[in-house]
Length: 186
Image (cartoon, rainbow, N blue to C red; front, top):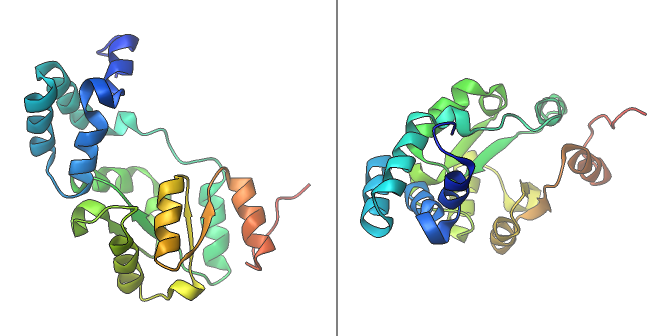
């Protein structure tokens, strides 16, 4: 966000000051960006509403890119004959931009987006919706997420989980679990 000084960006990303993450939670659950902006304006003021509008106008600039090694890992998993699906808390108005920008999102066998189904991780219902939508069973599924609360939510739905830290660790954990993918070469 080059329009703003570093301190203002830090304040914007401090939920107690701007309400940014509360607004994102609302939009992830189905509220539109216009509704999120209006909510921030009403609860936290015009300066934060204006920044949220700027964020949406320049959304792709907020994305940091594909985690190194993840595109290859997804390819290796799919080459092994396994499916890879996406389950994300995300605003419906921006998911298409991300999918157009990042090949890895287009590689998925399918996806469930919170704002499209009006449910959010870590609520058990969204995991059950994903299993149903993808036509897969909890017993043969592994859920990977970097947030502990989302891993706990998936566990409550009866899904085995891996807490994501980095691509190499995930690859090693999958190999140890019997997934037939290549190891990282020495």
